[in-house]
Length: 78
Image (tube, rainbow, N blue to C red; front, side, top):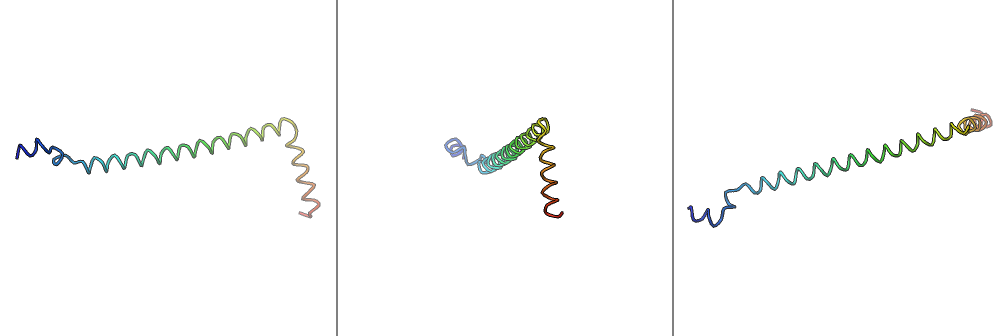
């Protein structure tokens, strides 16, 4: 028996359990990475939208857009 264990030590190791655990951990890290990337992209889009809003507001375009929207809605009868 000892000779067999010396020649084939892997039969006593829980390799399947170790591999399953590693696979689960890699899948979790991959999902976390995707979630973080999605949030980072959404934050960048939100920041760009806010910056555009601020640029429009600074240059008075915001008020102009509001006037145009009101005149369009008045013409449409709403």
